[in-house]
Amino acid sequence: LLLTIEAAKTLKGDLLPEVERALRSAIRASRITGSFKSYGKTTINAAAYTPDGSVLALGDSLGGVTLWDVATGLYRKALFTHVDNVDTIVFSADGRKMASGSEDGRVAIWDTENWTLLHVLTGHVDGVTDLSFSRPDGQLLATASDDASVIIWNVTEGKPVGETLYGHCNGVQAVVFGRDQRQLFTAGYDHRVVAWDALKGRILYSFDARDNIFDIDLSIDGSRLAIAAGSQVEIWDTATRYRRMVLAGHTNSVLAVRFGPDHRQVATTSYDGTVRIWRLPRDSRDPQRQVEELARIRAEPTAEPLFDLFTALAFSPKGDTVAAASVGGTATIWNVAAGGELLSLPGREAAVLALAFSPDGRTIAA
Image (cartoon, rainbow, N blue to C red; front, side, top):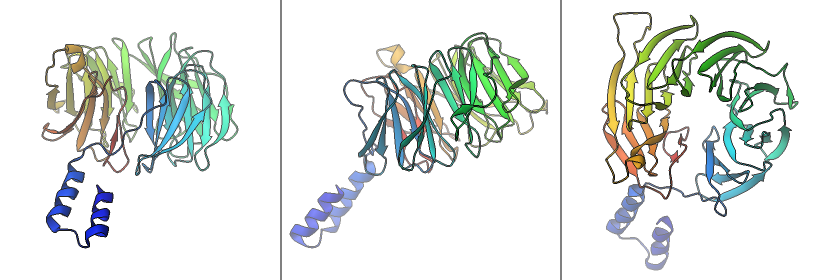
């Protein structure tokens, strides 16, 4: 449309004001800013923005990671190291490193300045399920695997730091660094969340959830840990190691939980077909303050009830909006304070498995 405006100016001189207004209005009304399609018939399993929001990395079912320019929507590069599904991608906080994990058990670390392969890490004997760079330096990388282990790697050397961590009796599904290199949390299929001293490789303490753990999230300040266990979300105080609150209300298993930019807003989505937005009390030790459910959002029912389930969840960087995507392929964005729908992105041919806001909050990848 912008090219149309320039062409009209070239052919006819000045563009009629009403024509330009109509064209620019059409641009603003268009909700999809780019469409990035994987090669062949591959499935996209992972998506991540660079910290500056300029590049979108997509991991696919043939082991490739494709890079796309967000501003232009143009393909930039394809990275091939893995021989099986790429299930997780993460960038370091400074954007200088990218890591990808695959069901082939390997992790690749790339230098994002010229996209050269730095290391291929081969310590796991089963699929890699999650990755986390240490904050804020990105000098360490934690890798979790279905082989029930976690490995801490020196990113510069590409070598393990200490011994492999074994704290679970089943596959490890999530790993996240806390405020510094030392604090690390892992969640496993054994209903257990473990807090580690990552540098010494020892368990500090553990949380035993009451049910299957589907997801965990750590607040930005590292003070609270949210555990989606069964139909409830448990909020733990990481300093005192106590379970301070339980978010109860869903009638089926909670699939995803996300903290907002502060440690008080929480969004959850469940098999019961709802997204719920919660506000936690400022001081979790105050028994007079209760958890407040700000909004309960349900998708418009369709002919296929399964399509109404929300599978992915993300907060905008400012925390004023939350997005959820469904099995039917529709992504919806709501206002957090009012709970009202801001816009709905049309359904695609398949379920949306991941969502990510750009750092400025103006675009979203599904």
